[in-house]
Length: 109
Image 1 (cartoon, rainbow, N blue to C red):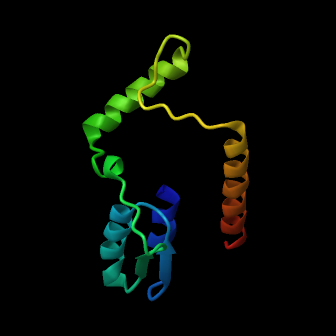
Image 2: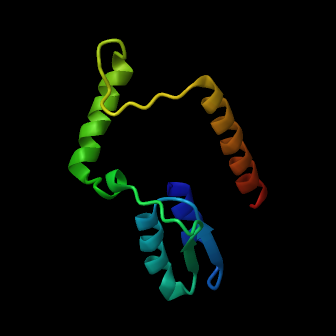
């Protein structure tokens, strides 16, 4: 997410971007970039609204980072809240997709 923000914030005035991530972030970025005539739109016609992401605040971020820190120190002793696990097949495909995206980004500089 930070990379998306950094790239678009550094973009040339008058450029256009289609972004495939959470709709509230895209709308904030769209409003932020409008004065520089940088057009930002949601990639999908179907909005990806993430209720959890829109509720993130400093207190909850600090709490989960504390939890992750404890988990890293002793994963066998700490149950990480909201931990998501995926199969090896999904991990493999996700890594391939991420590598392709990073390769494209690296090639565009």
